[in-house]
Amino acid sequence: MDLNSATWMVRSLDQRVSSLLITDDNDVLAGGWDGRLMSWDAEGGLRWSVQTDDRISSIAFNGQTVAVASGLHVVALQWATGETLWSKALEGSADEVRWWQGELVAISSVYDIEHNDFIESAVWRFTEHGEEVLVERMDERPWAMVSVEDRLFVGLGRPKCGLLDITSSPFVHHQPATISPITCGSGRGNVGLFGRTDGQVVDHQGNVCSTEEGAIEHLTSMLTGYVATNDQGLAVGRTPSGEACWSSKGMPIAVQMEAMAHGNASTLWLARQEAVNCRLEVWATDQGGLLAAGTFSNILCMAGHAERAAVGCEDGTVLVWDRALLRRRLDAPQENPSAPADERTSALQAKLRALRK
Image 1 (cartoon, rainbow, N blue to C red):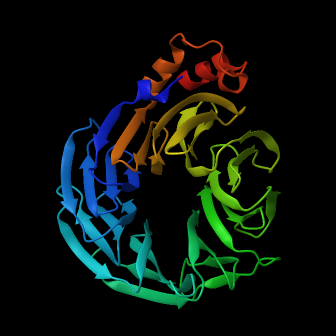
Image 2 (cartoon, rainbow, N blue to C red; image 1 turned 90 degrees about the horizontal axis):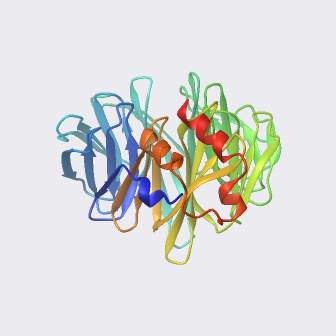
């Protein structure tokens, strides 16, 4: 099925979309490369549009306040109006923000063009009113921030590598058995997962869950198991114990995420980079069947949960899919029965029935 025929909402940010967030109430927030931040309500109506100073790389929401990483600053905005509540300059680029136990956690980094590497990073904490609680600096670049129950971890690049428990100060470093930089991370419930350049997926306790072919580019924790993709465009779905249950090989993957309940599992949304566009694919992760696909402008970011999925594109387009509408489109007769087998799968009808549950 062509995903273009099943979009629930299409909006424009009028600039490249760099970050997305969907709230539990199905509101959509989109940030752009030139600093624009827009908010749409659950029905698709524009709530507000504001301008920040620079590219928005991360968005966080705690139910009352929106926080964004914008260029060299973290900015907090009032949810209902978009009014700026406070703004704090960090040391270097503001990379990621997250509300954690009533405080805002931010990661910053300094990139040295001459050395072609990150030379300093920091983890910051602020109160909801913008008061600085702490800042801890390090030589390594944190590449992923993952929560595991009541603990918060970041995965580190060189020279230390390994994991850093940033739940409380002083931070605790967990040295890996072998030195390999962390490239990505994902978490669900009581398990945090991290991908490394040597192809290993490790949990937050340092246990090796699986070893993939090539460096891990993306890692997504699913309702059951996880999906790891490497730098060659190979996506592998695995059970919670690390056993491979399906795989898909194709063009390199730009971004991926979990979204929408699917029976007792969930669906994986991944964007494969083509010549000038992206092919967006939706996979049933319990059996590895391709449910739907479509071609769009280059996809730069994604966000989703059990009921909705959204992607942000290079041409400024924000596209949203709703689970109920997608289910109806999937249930409709398909016009191309001669499509390749990996796009049909013999279990398609079973998957559609699962999607209705």
